[in-house]
Amino acid sequence: MKEIRHIPVLLNEVLDIFDAIQKTKPDKHIVLVDCTLGMGGHSSKLYEKLKKGTLVSLDLDLKSIQYCINTYNFDSSSMPISDGKNTFTIWKKIDEEKSWIIVHARFSQIESVLNILGFYGYDLLLADLGFSNFQIKKTQRGLSFDSKGNLSMNLSDSVDNKLRNLLKNKLLIRGVLQRYTDLPDHTIKRVVNNIANYQSELNTNVDLIKAINLPKYIVRKVFVAFRIYSNDEEFELNTLINFISRQKSGVSLIITFSNFESSLVEQGNYRFGIIEPNIKEILENDQARSAKLYKIYSSESE
Image 1 (spheres, rainbow, N blue to C red):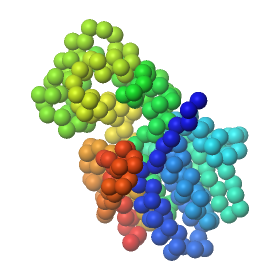
Image 2 (image 1 turned 90 degrees about the vertical axis):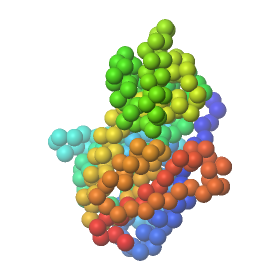
Image 3 (image 1 turned 180 degrees about the horizontal axis):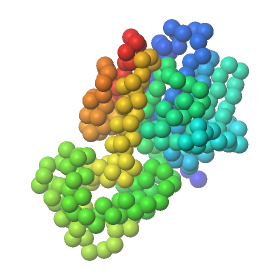
Image 4 (image 1 turned 135 degrees about the horizontal axis):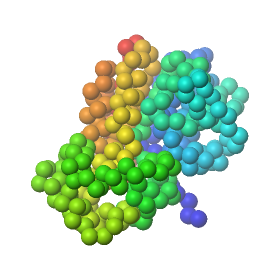
């Protein structure tokens, strides 16, 4: 099977920020959080640089977690952790003065996860809001333009009819596209009518592309909007932003890929700066084209 290559976006910038943090705390047990493990692109490089401390990486997608367990030489045995209300499954990799913990959880659950693990803050938190090539090309969830997949757009293995029910409701489709895209009203109307008037069953991503029947840049925006809706990404991100806004120490990094994501991040109760990929990265990694890295400062961080 051909190996899937995934290039993490804005990796050098993330690592530079972590280097600066670690240099100011040479003897401290550093707590790192990666809210979106994916294929481990950011997590693995952060762990390589970590001298003393713990990296906690979350993901809802068990296939991505299994990939990382195999790739980064984790103990394959798992264990549950719980506070009586929430229960999560974790996997551990332990080295001399550092450890890496993978947790099967949504990133909106990060506060519960950290509390159960005994961490009540962090030095650096990262959330990459994109999805990996693994999710696009190997899981057949209908996220790709290049290969046929079931029409679900879920970023996990859960099976539900949320997207299929959406596609039966013209009013709901219009609302989702108005909320999550910058498409003009006349284009949204065409998308809604094209989907409603499509004569065949909508069972795959290819069926949906045919139904929309508009230029690829429009289809891409529609797919992003449907993905956000299908995975409750607005709720997920708002919950994370609320958690970050309450932190009194530590630096938080959020990588966005859409105007909608950026607008939510910019509404948080904190100071932030924006870092964008350079031309070289954009030319080498198409996924970096629309990326923005938000560096968020807590009330006590510089």
